[in-house]
Image 1 (cartoon, one colour):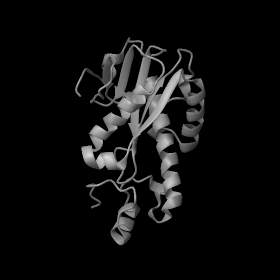
Image 2 (cartoon, rainbow, N blue to C red; image 1 turned 120 degrees about the horizontal axis):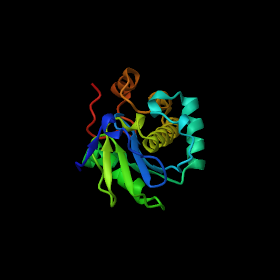
Image 3 (cartoon, rainbow, N blue to C red; image 1 turned 45 degrees about the horizontal axis):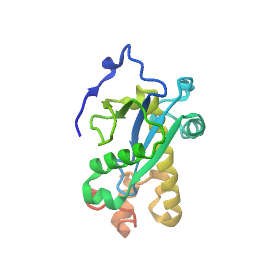
Length: 199
């Protein structure tokens, strides 16, 4: 769903912090295996935003520390998923938007505004805007980015214990050379996304 798309210059002078704002982001659009994870987060105005950043810019240790602070300090948050089967059925973009919708609908607090990372909006019953590179610009989206990344990494670590030959704990299902090579040797994992090419 297309909608109003904001960029960094559009955010100058605007107050996108506090309990009236929900941030949404996802993790896991690029992997060959596993589900996609989406998170909705509402932060209080006094949240320590200095701990936040794009999840990809934080070390694993800092991500986990920030995760713990977010889940205890946020006004509300919800983690949701779209499965590898759903990704195969409706494509990864639509599955990501579905997971975003599920996470928003799981909230118990109703925000006045929802800001979503990227340029495409999920179908949710709220005023919603897309923010290009929002995961490095908007605190609530940064928080959602961190929760989504940590939650998905932890899930892939559990899948690694079930199918250790694929190395999910190392690459979390992303198309690394090692992951592609093992797929070529022994075939796709139980959680392989249908239709995703390994070449």
